Length: 188
Image (cartoon, rainbow, N blue to C red; front, top):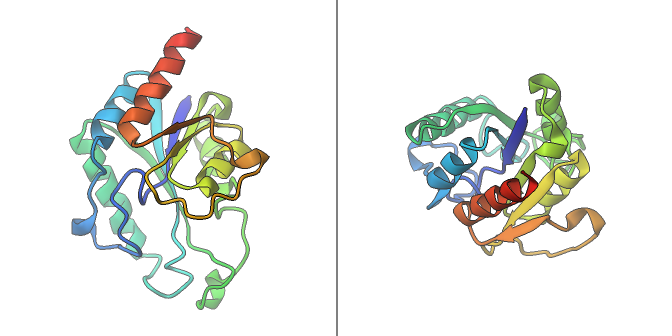
């Protein structure tokens, strides 16, 4: 199985910081049509998202169930199946003691992708990680995926390094899907 791992905020859905209110979650323009294109290429879809709001006490981990349900519903409306919603509730500077820790799941580390790969028998080398910041790119590269940076202005640090160089760069998810489809065609 090959997968598309999607960052949530700023990549798949509009970026509203610390939002867990389902009715305020909406797909980024072109996301649905881009994902439909990738679904025709037999990709399976997983969201992998840092959710430090839990560690900072801004919302409860239980609130993320409604977020996952909303994402699945939005994609279902686009005729896409969301096969997994993975999130990291940790942050080393958090104020909620049980979540205030360093972990292996928080991007730029690859823990969420590796967990999904193990649980769903995903070929990471045939998969892509798509995100809007270089932490997403680094997590995908560390996991062995190809990577796509959505360069929409959300990356503010631009700390480059060997693990932070994306395979491709696009201004939005739809354009990124077209690039991935082009690579698939070239490989065939």
